[in-house]
Image 1 (cartoon, chains in turn yellow, orange):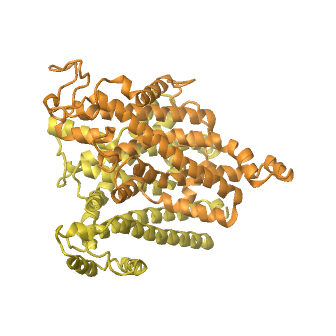
Image 2 (cartoon, helix red, strand yellow; image 1 turned 180 degrees about the vertical axis):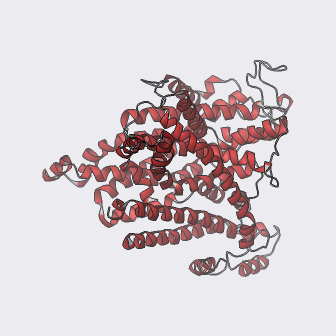
Image 3 (cartoon, chains in turn green, yellow; image 1 turned 135 degrees about the vertical axis):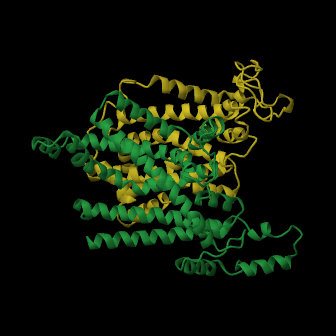
Amino acid sequence: MYRYVARRCLQALLALLVLSAVVFGLVRLTGDPTLLMLPEDASAEDIARLRRALGLDRPLPVQYWIFLRNALQGDFGRSIRGQVPVRDLIAERFPYSLRLAAASFAITLLLAVPLGVLAAVYKGSWLDRLAQVVAVLGQSLPMFWVGILLIQVFAVQLRLLPSGGTGSVAHYVLPAFTLGWWLVAGIMRLLRSSMLEVLDSEFVKLARLKGLSEARVIWKHALRNALIPVVTFGGIYLAVLITAAILVETVFAWPGLGRLVYEAIVFRDFPVVQAVVLLTAALVIVSSLVVDILYAYLDPRIRYG
Amino acid sequence: MARAEQLPLTMTPSPEPRRLALLWRRAPFLPLLIILAFIGSALLADLLTPHSPTKVSLPKRLRPPAWVEGGSWTHPLGTDPLGRDVLARLVYGARVSLLVAALTLALGGGVGLGIGLLAGYHGGRLDSVLMRAADITMAFPIILFAILLVAMLGGGLFNVVVSIALVLWARYARVIRGEVLSLMQRDFIARARVNGCSPLRLIVVHLLPNVLNTLMVLLSLQVGWLIIVESSLSFLGAGIPPPTPSWGSMIAEGRDYLTRAWWVSLFPGLAIMLTVLAFNLFGDWLRDRLDPRQRQV
């Protein structure tokens, strides 16, 4: 077990290192930010001075080393656009993203778990078919379009909910639902098929033979085991959520990381892009590491596989 | 991520012949019809509509669809804020979607197939290096990466295709490699080796045909998703640059006119939905037919 954990941690560390190098390299290739920051008639001397001030005149490996060392200390430099520390920008935006993610995840669990379980238990019924339709639609509708339509219907026509921004609980409803539906589709399908498998297994039959109530068999014994493969995909869901958040946050003017990185790319704000891309990719890597270790703990076959 | 990708395959349930089976027991006719219409309009866009998709005509801006008051059959689905025919732009937009999906799948799928075959066949250090690379690649959220690259290289078909394919190959490599690993244990491979088969021949003649089913299923399941990725990028302004019509950018253009001119954003959205739905249903069906062990996430 320790060897497995150590190996996976090492792999994750390596992945992070490569990631940081790739991000650093890519962002450096996007062009010179000084050209955007200075007026067009700036002299060569001005440009050189600015480049020196930003550390852009040093050799690339040195820039990378400095970047890496600072990043480990939580220092991602200053935003080129606003001259504020990137850390502050992220600290300001991250909670919004986190809250939106949590809200949509709550909606997802609230919808996906009952739907997935019931679809499996009442396989072939109208409920199952309804669940399938929800899932297929969720994976086929472009999220940004759903968001726009929801704004049009609920904010513009019915005037029930705000069209964007943050503030009250009502602001969460539309973006969280838009973001959540996508996830509902994936998790529900996965849960349904793993639930079908579990319901067919010996221990469920044993639980029934013991005389447990059907509700207890389904919602406790079967569901717990059916959730394992769903948890395995945690890392992937996180990646999906982050990607989707860029679109949803843009549509709903939500001040989260997705919008931050989108704006930063448009303005070639290197440090911000670097930091956000690194942070999100690191989140994905770390969460899949945690899931893997948890999984190996639960299922010994993996450790020795 | 490595384990997360592989595990469900080992605990796959019994095949489910019943998913949506009531609707399409044999073949999904409606989805096939939509797919044919999509490909047809992409190929024959010039013949299908008399209007130019890019010619601006301000006097004719925001004309409603034919069945709405004030509309006419000259512009069956109305015109956009620049007076361009919405139907014409939809038809030409299909071309962009198809082109991006086909090229990224060819590029990403091809590279992934090659790497998967190589890693699975060769094994050892090469395998672990390639698979680590795949894991790292998969940690990149695809849209984030594509926006980054497009911002860096500029928009355009080529850059969009390359930036998606750069992330896409990893999944193919992983799945194909897994398939090859299990094939390598089979007797016919050992026999081919004993017969003095060269590595190249072994890969091309014995391994490749056996992973084609898996590849086809994976490809078909991802077409719809790629259409969504392309339209998302275009929506964000990081895709195919205007004035070339793309469904995603059409939605973005109509966004500010929704209350006055709902048709500008609604129809491209419907087009995306129908096409993606058709490809997803078709992919599900193909998977059930060709490879019941595959599962969609």
